[in-house]
Figure (tube, helix red, strand yellow):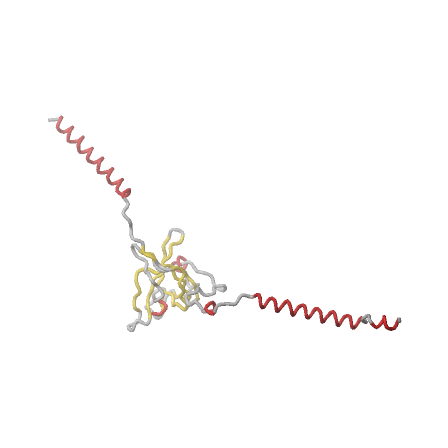
Length: 206
């Protein structure tokens, strides 16, 4: 009887092997459940957005005011700026393949601007140029800064490499505000009253 009872117990090596097998089966079951529980991704979620801002983890935005008073330190370096497209797109080449765009930004009450040399395709992303009654498209531009550009008659510019839209432009018509006429109306009334007093005093002196 003792031999039959002892055969029912597992030896230490057999117990370790059985425990390892059970653990492996449990892990496989957990992995299978996790895979089945993951939501299916739609096909269009993997489409690359061409307007997505580039990864700027290795380069910081340079204020336009810094480029306006730049010295030779920035000359020939890759910079990244953000500004509003103003004015209009001007052909830089006869075939229209390259454009001049002016970027403007107000920083600490001071407005600065810089000329950007970019392709026609990059410039086509601008839907609105800043002007009276309109806010231009906000762009992030990364490219090489030239303090005295040897290719463009020594002007200060940026040769764009990557152009991304930060915010779309918008138009805003000025509405009629009657309150804006109140100060002018008061001045007119005061002037009329003074003319009346002057006329009255002159008549009394006759």
